[in-house]
Amino acid sequence: MPRGEALNGVTGAAVSLIALEKRFDTVGAVRGVSLEIQSGEFLTLLGPSGSGKTTTLMMIAGFEQPTAGDIAIDGSSVVAIPPYRRNIGMVFQNYALFPHLTVAENIGFPLKQRGVDRADRSRQVAESLAMVRLSGYEGRYPRQLSGGQQQRVALARAMVFRPRLLLMDEPLGALDKQLRESLQIEIRRLHAELGITFVYVTHDQEEALTMSDRIAVMNEGVVAQLGAPEDLYNRPVSRFVASFIGESNFLPGIVRGTEQGFVVADCAGTIVRAVSSGNLRQGDEILLSVRPERLRFADIATDKATENRIGATVTDAVFAGERCRYLLQSQGGVPLVLKEPSGLAARRAPGDIVEIAWAASDTIVV
Image 1 (tube, rainbow, N blue to C red):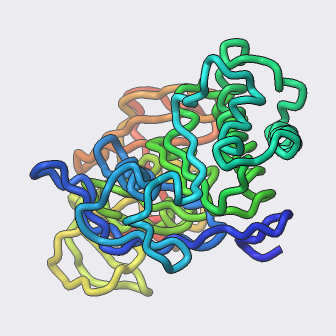
Image 2: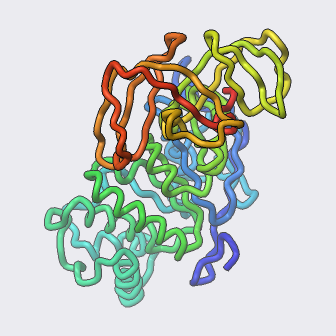
């Protein structure tokens, strides 16, 4: 089935954000954001508090008016169209269910507002409840449901009128970790079944990596990087992206040249090779990044021909279930973090003098 085509023939909307800006007094909450969201895509706006992600979502929904720029859905501007006429589904973190209405009445509310007759409402409500696996809950009230069940009802209500675009503003933020992870899978399943376009806002990087086709990492009102989860994690373009998505080690260095396609840098007296980013000259100051799980203690590392190596001292060792997390101090004084499977026999202790190795291909210039 092509992207954007649902089982029921509904196609996802294509959304264009064109030099979008939003200022509150003199503060630029969103500063020139341009994005092309494909039909049927699951795109996540990811960033810390104050990055502009929710403001961007609210402008797509119509609850905030852009200061400048345009928003187009399927090629037509919607900036002048009020929220209730945009035919967009919306799910909030606080569920926003009517406490005095039953589950069926909550889900059927958008249909009633659209003039759908009672028989069709009942049928569509039943279909939506089956979709979120809550058949039989029609007569219950929100207070009689768990947080996860309430969020499923909110999802069903947002999708019952078959919108081509569904917006979600941190919908799982109030749930515990286990339930959150379960609903991530459910939302991903619903996206695959419905074929409509999802735009999702979160500050949780693991959630974004798990659920998204693409992620727009936002910071200070702009898109810092846009790409597939694997690309953002493996090839961040800046220190902010590298540190916000996952955990990274950073090594400042000075370019000494190139070797077999790698940049060669002097990092406090240790030669480190990294994937070339181009346009670097001898003497340039650069910052290298490598993920903690890519580091290995040199006595168990392999393929020495393509490895970087650096001496270090273990300053702390933390058992974290499936992984051990080691805090290290390099010979050059740079703090490092190494993560390895906890099942490995050789456990290191604070004070141990070690050598760390990792692949040059896992080292990038940020």
